[in-house]
Length: 181
Image 1 (cartoon, helix red, strand yellow):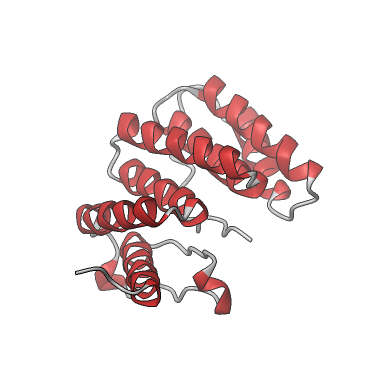
Image 2 (cartoon, one colour):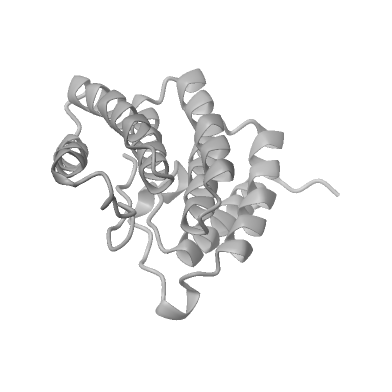
């Protein structure tokens, strides 16, 4: 049985919202532009493995219908979920796929967002130089498009410079991920 396009889109939207809620971040896509995603209830935070399973299903559907924009966002969220589970190699792999997808469709803000997340993973994996490189790349894109998230990336770079090498915390702890326009 083939789902009608509206039903497929509704299913994708629901899966993306559910997964985003479960991993405790905000996400917007073409369908979510109607408003901001709501904050997740505390009992849903931390269900990363469930969120990963839901997003993998959504990713399959997104690829089958050719929605590259939402695919890039889903890949970025998958990277974030793996990062929060400290599966850094998996997170890096998903972020690289997201970067490729964003670049293919010309989504410069998406590239910058993902580069910021990739820098966070590298810092958490004790590779501050790779984090710096990713954040500098993100900052260059954000400044070029005059994006308000540029200041957040500048802040990460400033904090990185101030920290002693043996005291580099995970930069995602206690902060919300920036949303894509």
